[in-house]
Length: 419
Image (cartoon, rainbow, N blue to C red; front, side, top):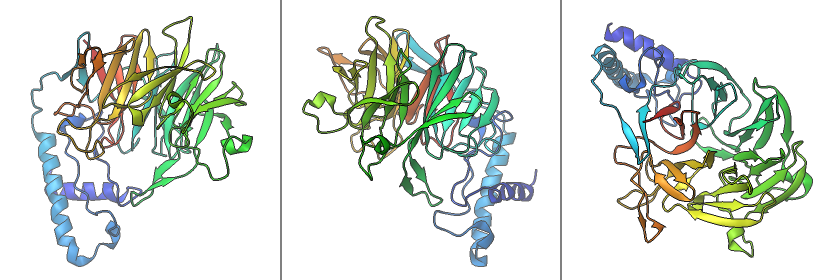
C-alpha cells in the first residue's frame, strides 16, 4: 500500500471527525487489528487552529509531511509481524490477573469513546458500560467482548451506572455529572441529572434538581456522580461534583433525607468529592451505605438512614466508587501521588485496589499493599503504568475484572482475567 494512498485514506477519516481538535487514537477496528499493534495518528491541527479545510497554503507542505510520516508508521506497524508478547500479570497474593487489553471488539469509528466511566452486569451476563460520548453513551458487551448494542445520545456528562432490580425486571440508573468539554477542550459545568431507564434505553423518570424540593438554594450546582439502591428499593444519589451530599429517595424518586456535605459539627459526616456510593451487604444483618470521600482518600460507612459508622482510610488512593462482590470491596484508583513526589494531577496515575473486609490485599497495577503496625502505607502506580486513572470495575461470576479507565486515550474497557 503506497504512502500516498495511506495519506488519502487517513485524511478522509480525519476530515469526517465531528470536531477538528480531537482525533481518535485508534482508526482501525479492534476486531481487525489488536489495539497494541496500532500507532496513534499525529493530529494535523493543534488546539485552537483552523479546520483542515481552511489550512493556509504555507502550512500545507509541513502538515502533509507530518501526516505522511504517521501513515508510513501505521503501514509498517500493520504489516510487521506481531511481537511475541509475554503475558502481562498484575496484582498480589490471591488476587492476580492477566491483562487482556484487546478484549473489547469495537470500532473507534462506529462506536467512538471519550472516557469509559462505569460498567455493570445484568442477570443475563451482559456488560453495560457508560461513557460520555453522545454518539453512544451506553455500550453493551457479552463476556467475550463482542459488542451487542450501543445507544444513548443525551448524556454529555454520562458518568454513573447502577442496576435497579425489581424482581422480574432490571433497570438502569444513570447519572450525568454535568461536566462536559467544548470543542476547544475547555471544561464546562452544567447541572446534571439522574435518570431511570429500561435496559434498552427507554426513559422512565428523571430525578429533578434538589432545588425543586427545597434542599438546595437557587444557583447551587447539582452534579451527581453515582447512585445505589437500598434493600427496600430506596435510591441513594451521591452529588460528588456538586455539594457532596448523599440524597436518599424512595423507589419512585420522592425525597426522604440527605446527609454529608461540608462543615458538619461531626467531621466524620463531611464528604469531600463524594464520587461513589454503594450498598454494602457483606454483613447481611447490617447492610450499610458506603460512600467515597475521594479527596480524603477514604471510604465512609453509614447506616441506611445516614448515621456515621466508620472510615476506611486508603492513603494515596483517590478512589472512585466502591464495588461489593461477595466479601470483597473493589475500587478504581483514579489518582495517586507519584512515588517521586509532586502533584498527583501532573500525570497519568492510578490503578485498582481490592479489599478483604477493611484490609487492602491487592493493588492490580499498583505497588503491593504494606501495613506497618496495622496502618496501611502509601500505595503507588507501577512504573509501567498498566492502568491509567482506574475509574470503575465490574466483577463477573468467575471473579474476572472489567476495568474502565478515565482519560486513557479513548481506550475501551480492559479485562483482568483472574489467575
